Amino acid sequence: MASLGFGLLAAALGVLGAGSSGPAAIRYELNAPLLATGGRDGGGDHGSPWSQPMRLVGTWDGQALTLTEAPQVAQTPPGLPPLCTQDFSAQPEPDSTPRQIEVIDALQSRGVDVLESAGCDRATVGVLVVVADDATVDWITTHYRVNVVSWLRRLPSGP
Image (cartoon, rainbow, N blue to C red):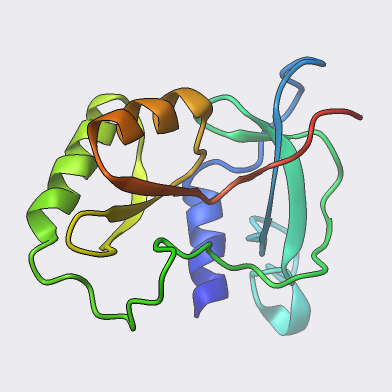
């Protein structure tokens, strides 16, 4: 079921693009299944419209991931990074909802979509964003106690 969510999220976010953002662009990666959109049998393994998890590498323009490498079979399964640094036993902090809403609203006002949030402890909110760019992280962490994690993982610079 989690894989299905990644595929839907990947499709909804327009993860597959065309072209290149230039040689100095920051590259990101993620592991996610791909959704087949055509073809005779409509999909991947055993008639499913989803492929096995694939490693996608590309540049992010704020709207879509433009692939800079051909998709390859992922060596690790898809998964989201933890929102909180400590294990909060899947029990969100009971009074964290107003803080979560405030942080989400602040990020959305800057054009940043929040994919998930959680109350980590009495003072800290964990948020999952598509890309945790330096400017956004710097801004939000100066205004709130936030643990920001990214769905797209930044790759080291270089070829």
